[in-house]
Length: 316
Image 1 (tube, helix red, strand yellow):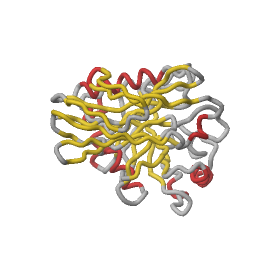
Image 2 (tube, helix red, strand yellow):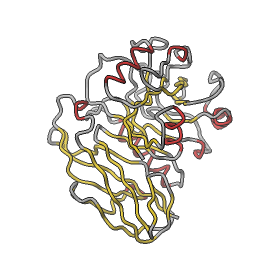
Image 3 (cartoon, helix red, strand yellow):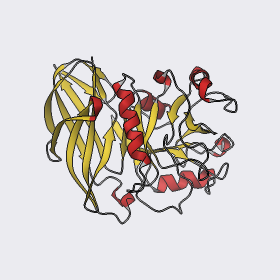
């Protein structure tokens, strides 16, 4: 098990970014990312320039429509996005899944027209079980970026309905000119660092959206150890937390970040436990048909803020 920092939402000169494909890979390698996803708008024209000798990459596309942006990763063949409309999106997602694609919802509450037409999610999904992940955090972290609060609430509501959907962060990386506090998605790689390993981690729900710190947990119950994304039985369990607050500390920019507490959160966003960051193990009685995620909290420039959130474990 190795939770490694990844960026799953990147653009190049093949759409509206400033990087060439190789510049993106080199910049990400210099930033000590493990892998990036090339997700240019409605095109795969950068694929031929990918170079694993610089950095492994996931082949993706950001379906960019007037009704929302959908991230498609790892599809083995082309699925036409041009006829996607609110009421046929389930059929389009089924087509993506049939060719091995992994489906994510990009920035569901991004400010829309005229700044970024179609960025807000308005597709009418009926089968959320076919959605693998949601960008619960997007772009630079700031008090003005209220879309992140709404995206996190949407994800919580879907977990409450019984859907097993992973969380991610998306920088929506277009250039090295942008300023601010940028995070990453930590993915648990079980083996080689490559497209297949990253997609497996996302589909299994082994992800953490973070402003920087590495943060994850394991659960111990009746002699067995469970990982993020897995399902265990109701009853007593012990959560073991692992935190590296110095990981990617440089990406905080000029902000003063302090990590203070860990919260265990369940259905409805209810906090069932809060402990000091120094507390490594806590005991919890898990309820039937509940989900449990961990959140790392602290302050940014003296103001309380959530700083990392894990995908959940589930109790049956």
